[in-house]
Amino acid sequence: MRGVKVYGVTFYPVYVILSPIRSMNFPFPSDATVSLGSQLRSIRHAQRFTQRRVAQVTGLDLDTVAGLEAGKGTVGSLVRVLDTLNGRIAGQPEGAVLGEWLRELRHARGLSLQQAAAIAKISKPTAIKLERSTGQIASLFALLTAYGQPLRLVTINREANSWHSIVRAQPTFTVHHGDAIAVLRQFESEHFDACVTDPPYALGDFTPKLVTEIVQAWAEGRDFDFANSAFRSYLQQDWYQDHWDDALPQPSLWREVCRSLKPGGHAFVFAAPRTADLVALSLRLGGFEVRDQIARIFKTGLRLGMDVAKVLAKRPVMARKRSGQIVGLLAERRRFPTPGGRVPPRAGLALTPEKIMEIAPETAPIFERFSGIRGSLKPAHDVIIVARKPLRRGNLADNVLEYGVGGMDVRATYLKAQDGQSRLPMNVIGELSEEFHPYFYAPRVSVRERDRYLPAGMKNTHPTLKPIELLRWLLRLSTQSGAAILDPFCGSGSTGCAAIMEERKFIGIEREAEYVEVARARVAGWATHSNGRDSEPLR
Image (cartoon, rainbow, N blue to C red; front, side, top):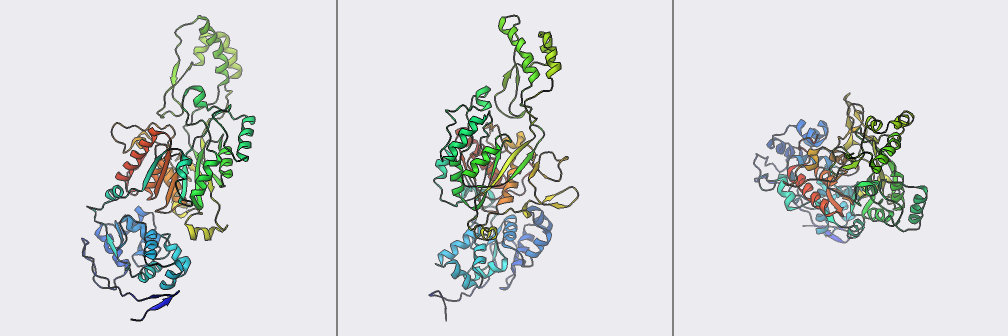
């Protein structure tokens, strides 16, 4: 047998005979020349799926599914269909990402990318794409043939190797308990594909003097000492004696996040409108480029600004109470920060204007003059800062080719509007489905979503949950299946739930022990009960 010498290494041809798949529970053609498309079609028939059903579940066009069954199309589409049909390529370890498996095959043969490409008669960029689980099926066939590995499809045994057991045997998520910077230093550089996180907002009074001190510290390369400064969050100083909102994430944190992301990796960072500028500046000083802001529109925000008329009118009422002129005036109880939030109730003198004027008639002119004067507008949107780690060589196309990240996957996030037309994703997200139907719709977190799949007796008390559907949309926009997602402020694990449903790997970090336990249980529950495609709606 005569071999071929490439880069000093002699390779010998490998003759592969495709044999019938006897382990499957459906008839399979035995002809050695059977096409990939007919194999895929046989698996679909065995699973009792129509092409239209496959298209609905995977989000692919019907023409794309039909093309795959004709042996044409992309590797990414093939992977999505195989995942739906509980199938894989023969020899591919169960639960292994296709691109990673191809890399392992190459390493096992001691080949460089250039050598592997030369043997398969494909270009090196094409080989790189295949190891990123992208590219064309024809190229995949050529590479596997060069490795002596037939492109033959098999099904995973649904009894012994279901999605549930795969998740338990090979967990795709980890929630670390500890300081975010300390935990991140354990990861090598360029480990994660994207970061989606909801850090503390630091809602409080930022005077010009305080902002100057913060920016000066950051410009000098040091963290600002929030604990010993004049800053106090509204929650901590007023009534809610907790410390989770006492500070903003500082550039030192974002430097570690940026280091751990692949070049071009996106960070989606939630922020409040009043402090989004400081969060964006912190991201910039941490090494990120701020690319955009997404406005998340809602209609259930509480009016948190001061009611000037009521504050002025309550002063004579409190004076009467302190002097003993009135007794038994109890403070009514209100909820904060959201009507459905599970946080301790806020106590205050929540009297109506009529009750105040009944106690202190002299306050009537105050209401007449100052009624309607408030400290702020009613909040109706949150901000999601869109930041990106700089591209390796400044070229987006080359960066996407090499690292698989850097761009926005607008095809995966098309919106089907009420008029039947597909619209490109925009930087506005609506919770108002009727008023904002042209935009992506992500409803607020319901009680059912908050506690879903938690063990009996465990409650999710985190006060600032974000909708899982919204987080899934961000993941589809920025990454592909198999990507590694980071959340350094993971709270009760909503980003992890979204990552599991979108078939991404997840690393979360949380400093509060209570939320760590909730996050672990919550993400594990979603992984066990949901396959990321056919789960019941969250609304």
